[in-house]
Length: 372
Image (cartoon, rainbow, N blue to C red; front, side):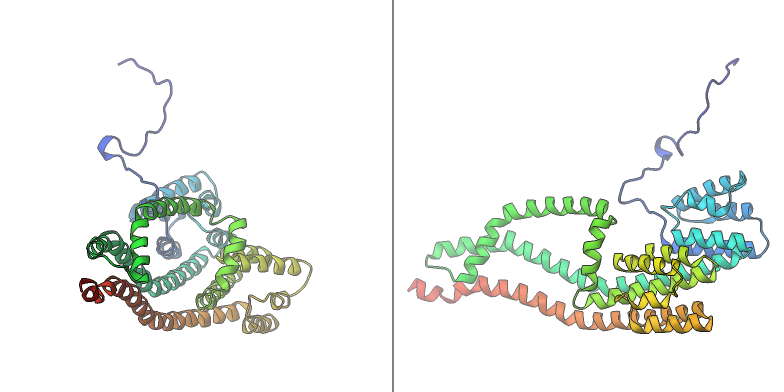
């Protein structure tokens, strides 16, 4: 047609009805399970002799997670231009955790990339299993709590006004529990909108601020002091610390760098702050176990086993044993917690609903005397 292009730019993926629509909060991201599968497959292909570019190309084509496939294509393009795989991963730090980037970097440098990826896959698989255990333990009480709240709201909004109208026609004074229930029912017209708006506002604020230091340094210590769940959360944090630290040491990551990364991935500000102090002591020439003993968040058994591992030159093995022990402790604790919570939640639901029913029927008991 005799037309020359003046500028060329890549169009968005898909056009019109074929274009992908992403809704904030509902779009699937890159999870640990996806990274575990990717790392395992990548280790197998590299160990079999496939080139890195071909491996990345295959992974980008066969992964079912679309955001991860898009990232892998970008990583492949970066590697093709001469960037290292760890450098390409670091461009997507929102999807690839620091522990993964640094272990890949150590494996790249030491010539055991497939072994590093195997360690990453095993680490993420155990983390996914740990999260699944906690989630399954919390599912039942959360569902029962939601059901009880919904039942209470339905009774206050729809059932209590019917009884109130009936009682007003009979005359006489209502019992105190019934009067409280009627008052709560009348206030629902104001309380429900306020609760909805407050819940939405808190959710938005929490999603933006939950990872900031000023929030974490208040919330995380409070979590560890909770009556029943605090001990469980501490066990989870110690298991995560031990497993991540063992993998970092096994991959050849320097101790100071490993302590910093393990603190960031521990999931608790108390652990992270403690490891910053430990890293500072190690930088001054001290051992790891000595400064750890001064941090109350780490149980004595953990610090003693780390001390033995340091003396015997088997720190990685000791850390793995600590991680396995606390994984079993978390699993056992969650099973006991679930067994204890089930009857408690049933009793809680019975008291709430039963109390409201009794409060509604108390005036009926005095109807005969009122009629006379």
